[in-house]
Image (tube, rainbow, N blue to C red; front, side):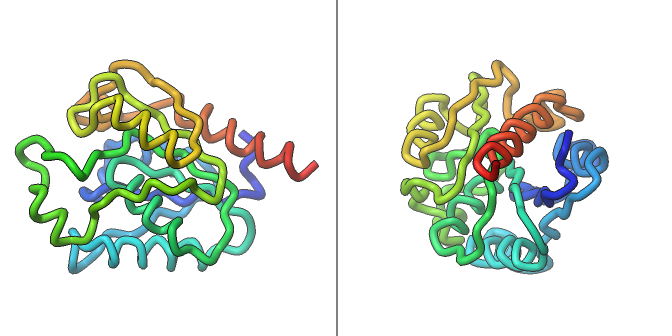
Length: 193
């Protein structure tokens, strides 16, 4: 992967950094990555999460590509609505549908509403993006994910029956992340040439 001139910013979901998560393995494998740090307070605050992402993106010199998962996708699309820093693209993996009830053990719709997460932005993103969608994600119906991808102007890629693409679904390493990230970087380089 030729990411040497691009900084990859990892945007975790609401559970923040998870040691056995594919984002963690990806960050360890690539040379130039930064992960949005966990919040100490206001863990369900959309405003706080968007501010943390904004701080990380603005601390990077040079081109940035985001790699977001789950509610990290929602952090990314909310950030994009008010961002002043241009980025090169985003891989948006298995977005969590925070407008609908999540399975037990996840925040309630009321808690997410209070945290400012809804409604989910549905304006076109100002950068190229790929939505990696699971066909059996317990946190989002595939049709809703397809509608979000269309609204965001994202390329929709079905990654099959991967659950929520997290350790509970059997992912650890997810090699396809590198391929999709490379697609974004290659598209960026074609525009630059």
